[in-house]
Image 1 (cartoon, rainbow over the protein chains, first blue to last red):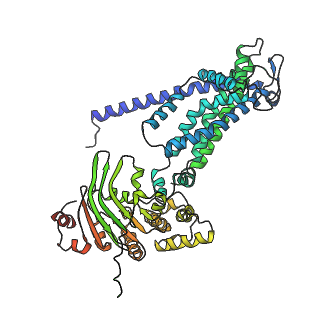
Image 2 (image 1 turned 90 degrees about the horizontal axis):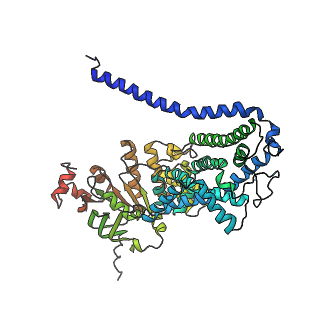
Image 3 (image 1 turned 180 degrees about the vertical axis):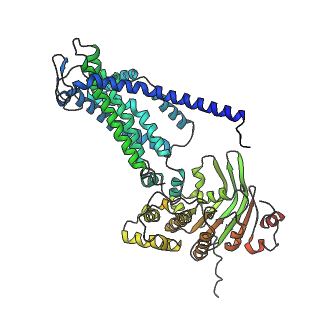
Length: 289
Length: 258
């Protein structure tokens, strides 16, 4: 009575096949990540020490630590965040909460998506033209960070807009029907329920700029500069450029050194991601609807 | 000679109202008046334009870009599209939707939100308003010990009463109810209906419902909407006593279609 028919059997076999295929693809995806991390840890691990992190490079960058580059990257990412987050969040608020749904808004949305696809070297040249030369910031942290900020603006806007749109429309209408203005609604209902998503999304996206090389190498990052920057008008070393330089431009660098630098860089980004994800999980657990 | 007391002006006067979504006509030719302290029922099958009608009364049509409204609506004698400050209009009109919308705030903050938006800051004043509105919505006894817990975690019936309390906290002159009992159990529905009967002393209510008997229990007068047309407006009891003008009304009221 309940015997499986031939068709049932075939469906079951096909089902197993698909499942296997998807599993294989997923494993393939993980392989490069695991390989990269294990190579870095294996080859770069021995170089790591407190001294490595907190001393300057010496002997033409073939020895010593990475302190100026580490500090420089923190400067660059921080200033870039300070510039891109207010502008990006404000733009996303306008697009999501105020803008009427017309051709202009749709064109702007399309432009933002396309902006995210502009190659970083193009942003770099834009940064040279706009910030270094036109605004006369010179090659400086300010110029480099603004270039990074322009580059990350689209992702900041998209991440913010997604968080805003996750707030149910019914909440907004209920609030508007009480006579609340758009801003009162944003302030009392929309932002409190999306701020966590906005922050985590933004941190996640911007932490990626720590690894960018092209946009900063013409605008503010220095080849070798054994001093810490004193203000945003100074040049600085940066982890990403430093890695590029000691891997390709400087002869006689011990093999382990670039791996050590890469390991520190990737750890910085992963640490920011981990914080951001932990933050998100914490806030999700308190989700209010 | 004492002059006869002048006829009170209706709270709502609607003339030749037509509502379109893009090119589609959703409702047309509606002319009606709602008196002060009246419960005005609107019945009709799905898609008859009841909700669209309700949405135009406090200019919710602005929330739907494709929605356009022709005709005239006067609230307290003033054309609602000439109100320069639409927010002050909306404050005078409370709205309750079919599905309760408990904002993700505490019970207290849900009810205190509108007074706060209106500039009331003192805790003592807010306490008074919150308690009064929750009592009038027949919810106070159930939530008085957990005013700080989330409004969105109350049960469906409680949330709907919270929504009503919130609408009352605006101090509205007019309350719009759109099929409020859809997500509410029968016992709670009866409690809310009792609340509405009491509220009639103070405010005016427009009640859209797909329960014919609910209109009969509550409404002083009832309008019957059908496929974008207002077929008939009458004293509610007359609608149920075969004294109807239009056969379609009788068929609907007696459950022969819809």
